[in-house]
Length: 179
Length: 122
Image (cartoon, rainbow over all chains, first blue to last red; front, side, top):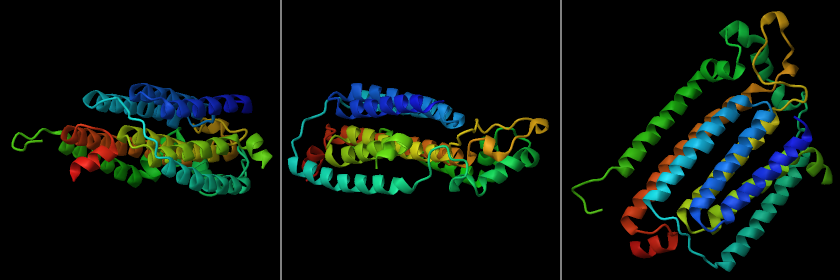
């Protein structure tokens, strides 16, 4: 993965994100968002995060798009045009300040690909040294997900369960009320 | 400032996507459009974390057999990957629940525009 591929994929993802947002028809917007998701998955596969890329391609590009499409077919895909010039100006101004601060702060972030950067120093090198011995799993991401941080994954499962119940409660049709 | 664009293009893309998502969530009145903005914001944060995990000479974090053991510098940092796997799944859960809310609102008020829903509520 060269820096050029990174530039290309980053450019493509920013362009597709802009397209998804500024296209007028919501159906086209959602499909452009799926393309955005796939470009991000490709980018992450190139950056060495294969598990995240799989998950993004399956869950982000596949399942989220499916949810959006189901929601659009059950509702409408027309968007109305609003002027709201004042709100736009205030938002653009404050987000511009936030963007400048973020850009200013990113000068101090580690250079992309620096092996001595702080996030790569602490506990992750222990995982990389010992996980084969301690968990007998060659894929370190799996070992951390299901073993070292298994409690986190249990919490994640609880979140999915709660979300499933929430969707069911919201979408069931009640015969007794007049909704 | 110019080096950021040259050596850290991922952070610049992160900032653009994050601000774009936030702007859409504030300005648009269509509820599905707001959710598209939320999705872009979530994925931009995942992009930021994955960028922090990259190592120049690093390969994917799947270990070689112990006879060919490599030092930790030879693998990408696995911890942000794990955290972002969780973030993707939790993001889809929030997206699902909020789309279910949008469908329930549409059934009751027959519109996706926030101002019209507020009008009909009164």
